[in-house]
Length: 65
Image (cartoon, rainbow, N blue to C red; front, side, top):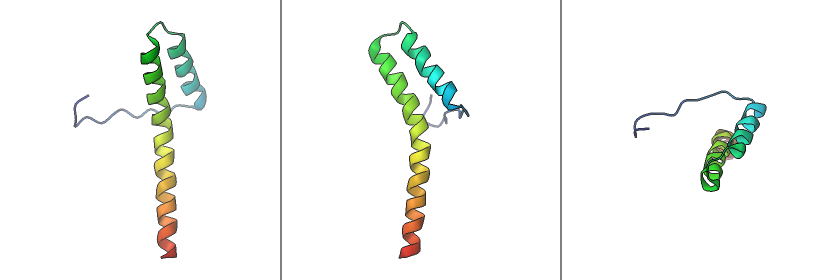
């Protein structure tokens, strides 16, 4: 991926995400690569939620000032 290329966005259910993680764990790739891939998936799921929560907290704080 080049510096200007944005990642593709996929709308996946929690079951799809769990199945992808299980497939990675069941694969024969080395443990470090598995851990990296699973961490990337978990970050991709967590980050949008965290950003949204942070934005909400900032907007609430702005109302109090």
